[in-house]
Image 1 (cartoon, rainbow, N blue to C red):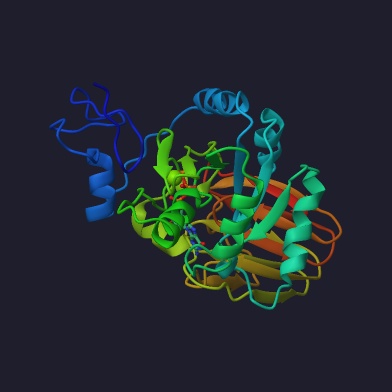
Image 2: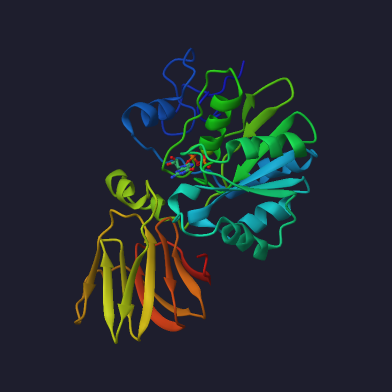
Length: 330
Ligand SMILES: Nc1nc2c(ncn2[C@@H]2O[C@H](COP(=O)(O)OP(=O)(O)OP(=O)(O)O)[C@@H](O)[C@H]2O)c(=O)[nH]1
Ligand SMILES: [Mg+2]
């Protein structure tokens, strides 16, 4: 009989330690990887490919069940359109990790921001799973819009799907169960069925991969610094003439013209400023970026920088990390 890991949904197997679902003994309910994440913070990356993910979406698309699309507010990625286009199901939007953005930002502004993707959501909710904020509102909306017993939870990898579901399990069911969550992308490996009540069963899914995410390229101690844990204190700098900003060994930006720039990144990251030429981090991958009116520069998995005036800048970061501009979020 096929058995599945309770933490990540992988099929349990005893043959290959380097692929998903490995256990030394089939009596175990958690795979070795989940066990190590939970007990030792030992993160082993097992990436799925997106073809597999799209095949899972096709299975959801064959149903008419409600789909909850979870979007990380720190990481609103254009790929959510790809997910929405692949599904004909009713879609409920959940914007999560609200606790990380400044309290002074209007919720309505954040909710409206998503309208530019022109996805016909049945409704939208903004939550913080960490703080247990707006979970009752979300639960009521799920009960209101669900078409059958099953409700699927989808989104990009690392969006916070499993953390949200752990809250749901704890708040609204009697079951004693925890899905594995982690800072590392691709934690959930397969569909995981979570019966909450006779009327409601959630199905957690692996997230669509986001290849350019910085978290794929850094070690655990660095990840702990980069992933914000509390409300971000925006840091604003006035640029007069030329200025270089260097953040750890991860990012360098050369500004060339007068501007005002605000960083939305983890509070523990130090921003060093240089007013004279220097060659720090120039060995990293170079991006020449043209910033338009009221735009952010997004460094995937790291954070974003709000730039007041249109300009050209040079940015250096780890090879493979995706960098792009978008309309200002805040
Ligand atoms: N600050 C904050 N962090 C959160 C919140 N929800 C999730 N996280 C963090 O986000 C990271 C990813 O969470 P997961 O629940 O594992 O994400 P996922 O969408 O299930 O990811 P995959 O299984 O890889 O697709 C973890 O480090 C969580 O602690 C939240 O509301 N606030
Ligand atoms: Mg997950």
